[in-house]
Length: 226
Ligand code: SAM
Image 1 (cartoon, helix red, strand yellow):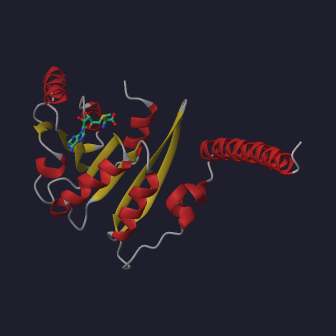
Image 2: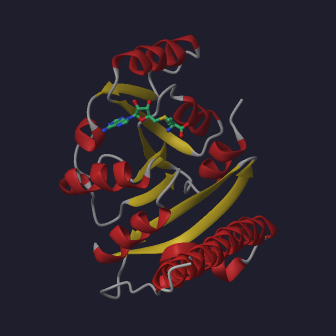
Image 3: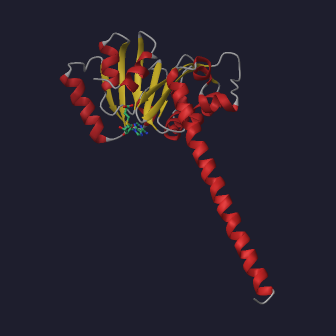
């Protein structure tokens, strides 16, 4: 069973491609993508021994060893340049994702499609893409309460530099355009949270003002010797 988050990641994978899922953990996504005829072959990359062996046994149990290659290694080290047309990196922090991409730059070909699902720091991923000449071609957002997950699909930009406004970096250019109910909910909740923080800051300021005023009174009282 794939989570809603991984199902949504899968829905953005173009058909008939060789897929690399980097940081695959259990290899659920690559197995399902091949089973459903979305990917023709897949590579499951994992840096940790435990999840790697788990992935191996999952793939063997499904009898999919011919179509899903499980590989132990760091980031994009597990693939040859251009070997996988689609690279998925999901379920980790945005910084780790961009670090993996940055270190594996040599493995990214002209026709590579990236599908990224940062758990946090989505803006950092978008900034990395924009500055590296990638353009965001699709995005999705899902809610798995209490979390919201954003998924970013990118291809090489054909028209030079891909500029994003601050708003687009933060909220996603396609997500802003689509304004789905989940997107609206995420940002409405974020706004409510920020309003609370602002209110409590305001209260702190008021309390401080009262204390300062009292201190002033005390000083005055001392000066006039009462
Ligand atoms: N991609 C799956 C998903 O979205 O459900 C698994 C997410 S899991 C939280 C993150 C996985 O990434 C872990 O299994 C971790 O070992 C792996 N990982 C972390 N850094 C990695 C790296 N540099 N190269 C490959 N895998 C890495």
